[in-house]
Length: 187
Image (cartoon, rainbow, N blue to C red; front, side):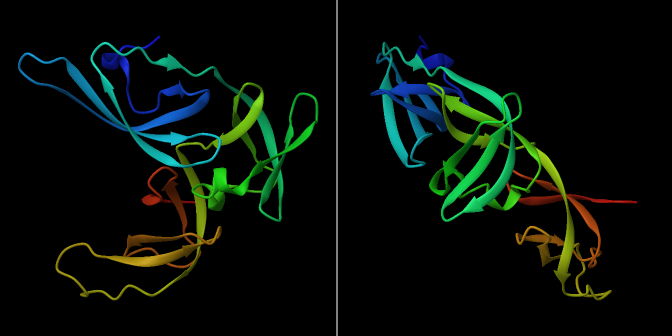
């Protein structure tokens, strides 16, 4: 059991038999009162976000969440189909659970699948991935006094802001959590 002082972003907890991921937290304590923890939680089964406040003596149950390797196969209707790498069983994860990370799923790639009570609920992406720029406007020298940015469409369809020196065909390292440019990859 967690006390309110042990909860951090990224912890998975159980509330009313549902697994939640802590996405934000603010811990505060006033003079003689006990501590208060205000959190924003994401339901790992449905993707819904809720705000929940815990009082000083509350105990919070950690979720029994595990991981296994699986290969992404294809998208069918609103479901994303995967295959376990150890026993080749196929399963799907509903699109509602993956809508934030769907652009980063590449057919044939292996991912860590998060499961709760042996049911797959989401995908753990690598922190960074490399994509090619498919479309961007040319950056004209002298456009800005400071470094500027422009939109670029990547090979996965995602549109991100990139520096003016990026051109079509460049390979970029992209942060998968914030969906932002990190650096250009030299061949």
